[in-house]
Structure formats: C-alpha cells, structure tokens
Length: 555
Image 1 (cartoon, rainbow, N blue to C red):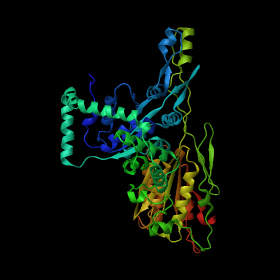
Image 2 (tube, rainbow, N blue to C red):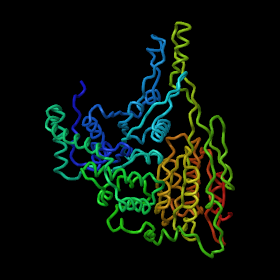
Image 3 (cartoon, rainbow, N blue to C red):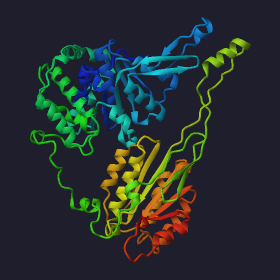
C-alpha cells in the first residue's frame, strides 16, 4: 500500500544548499532548475519528493524515469478513443505534464542521448512538436529541471549541464550527532509516517506561505547598478562562456532577496548564491570574496605555475615552426546514417568510422496497426523502423614521460587535443584519455561527451617519470574490453622511447598491443620526437604494429 505522506521537506537535516536552491526555483521557476551531484544516500531524491508534497497539486512535479519510452515522454495517441470512438485524441507525455512545474530525473547522467536531445529542445523553446502518424501538435513544456546524479557513474553532456540553472555538490555528513539524528528520524518516519509528518505540519505550512509570498513580490525587487556590475565581473573573472550565467546570477539573487523578504539585492546576496550559478559553468571556479568583487573585470589572472607556463608557451626563436596539427587539430567527422564515412586527419592519413548496425524498433506504429485491424478484424502489431545512430569513440594515449618536456612536445600535444575537441563540439563523439604515471599508466578519463572536462584534464597533464607503453596499452584494453570497438579510434602520442615495464620495454609494448588490441579497426602513432638526432622508435612501433604513422615534426 503506497504511503500517504512523503518525508517532510522541513524535517531533512543538513544539505542546506540543496534545500535553498530548490526553494529559489519555487520562487522563480525561470531560474531553470537545479542539479544535485553527490554521494549516494544523501537524501537527494527524498528532498525532491518532500518539495512536491510541500507545494501541493498547484505546482506539478513530474518524475521522468531513465527507462521511459518515447511515447511516455512526448505523448501518444489514445488507443481506446481511436478504436472505440473513431476519434484521434492525444495523451499528454511527461514533458507536457510538467508544464509550469518541475521535471525530476534521478540519475540524469544515465539518460539516453535521444531523450537528452528532447530535453534540450524543450528547455530551449518552451515546448515541442509532437509528431505522430496523422497528427502534428505543439505541446507547451516550460519547466524547472531537477536532476540528481552520482559522478562516479558518469558525466553529463555539457549542453544539458548548462541548462540547469543552479548546481550543488553534496556530501555525506561527517558529524556523529547529525548522522545519528538523521538515522533516528528516518526510523520514526518509517514506523509512523502520518504521525511524523504531523510533527512538522506547522513548519511545512509556514515555509509554503513564505515561498508563495516571495513569488508575489519577486518582480518588485530592486537590483542596483553596482550589483549588476558585480555579477558581470564574476562571470568575466571566472571565464564563463555566453550570457546565461549573468542573467542567472541576477535572477537567483533576486529570488534570494524575495525569499528572505528584502526589497533590494545586495552584494552579500550575490556572494551567497554565486557558487550555485558558476561552479558548473566556470572553467576554474573559485568562491568570490568582497575584495574580488570590487576589482576591475579586466584584472589579469594569477600567474600560472612554472611548469604549466613552460608547457603551454610556444617556443620562441627556436627555429621550429608551430605544427599545422596544433593550429587545425585532428580533423575527423562522425558517420552519417547508411553511409560509411572516412575521417580525414588532414595529413595524418584517414581514419574510418563504421556506423553501428541498425536495430529493430520497439515503438508501435499505432495508426498503421489500428488501420490494419479495422480492415481485417485481426490485430497485428506493426513496429516502426529505426536506424540506430552511431557514436565515434576517440582514445588519446598520451606519453607524459619526462622526455616529453625537453622540446615542448607536451605543449604542442595539449594544443592539438584542445583544437581537435573544439572543432566538433556538437557531434556524437566520446573522448577518453590514458596517460603514463611514474613507471606505469592510468585511465585519466573514461569515455565522455563532456568536452569541457576532457579539455580541463588535458591541460592538467604534467610530464615526469618513465615510459611504460606496455602498461598504457593494457589500460586502453581495460577501457575498451566491454565496448564495441568498431567505432573506436586510438591516437598514440609518443616518441616511442619505452624504458620500463620489462627487461625489453619496447618488445613488451609490442607484445601487449598484439595480444589485447590487435582487433582495433584504426590506430595511429603520432611521433612526438623532435630535435636534430632522432632514434625513430615511434616509427618502428607503428611499423611493427601496422598502425598509421605521422611525425609531428613534419608539420
């Protein structure tokens, strides 16, 4: 028997940041929702359910399950009306049901690409066209998106991440008394939900009244000019792209003032909410302070560390021209439906990406099935035909050994990877990075379409240690062993000077690749060796493994 009461919102101890963000979205739904990222079992879902109970039926709260079908999300034709009444009626989908309310997605990072695209379209336009056989109807769908996720289970696509107005990172409480309180309260609620709720009924009512009052005088809140300039300075200093963050800083600070029954937004209010707006958008977010807020927006950034500066600078007066690949990146394109595409790496040979095989659709072609039934009197399910989209996977295996710092190779490699990723920001490409570490190797980042994360990790790479290419190839195998490798391309950035891992490190690398990665459809060695005297080990590696080869110095 389902519970009549959810756990009261006001009874949840701790997690004050998430509670505040949710309440501010109630005050001003145009903020666009909140993403809660954190440990499992930290009351993220409980809090959202409590918020729904707090506001009652006038504010829709719709839960979108990860495994929801397209018809369930967008809407479908009512079969009863079609067969029995010979009329075409549309049952609203979850997106339309969430109009002027909240759409909640648990584990939002696990949402499939198609539903993620639908969410992006609806979020950007305030609705969507429901296209079904014989009908085309516009569905209003303006909602605040609330998502929860555990970062250990994967990242979120940058385009969807930016659609969350606010974001909060929450952690498991460490205080013994607080943990004890949380556990005992849950025991009491599970034993007597109604009795436990009644203990907080007065607080629930008071909070609801506070939210409704804030909504009423939201547009009367004043935002002084110096506060407007402070918001602009914060977005500039944190290197935030676009204007969405500027607008959200103003909206969220205004909602904060309304919630606490103030008439004017102050700098302190902006500081209180800035992290919620900026931390998932800024490249290197640091909490603002009063002194930082008063500095000019054009103040130069702090100096980079010596090592980062040395690696990122282009050599001056060295007689070496900046490689063409650094300027243009590795050129490739994702496959188109029904057509094999060759990926052009400029002068770095061609790399092909095979499309994934088509799979039968499980989506019912409603009108065709019903029409056939009306004609024959026998019902047979007719399913739509669908071609699955393919996704290219790119693995960057990066030699970060000490030799890579001698001729600024690491600086060049970072430029190549950054340019490559930035060339195709909207394509269905997933990237992963494997790097050397001391005398072994590690997976720096598993496959993700979060290009900003890949770029950030790329720039954080540092040189040092020995070259264990055999261990690096094993890590690539670990990364790929459960995946279909037909759409995977491996780029090995190295000078080939393997010097650890076995008695003969070079042969160990060759044997490891042949044992575990020989079935890779496409792999390229990009030789990073520079200087007058060259050993040519990277070229030997490519020849032994029958991999494509390109020398960075050739550009």
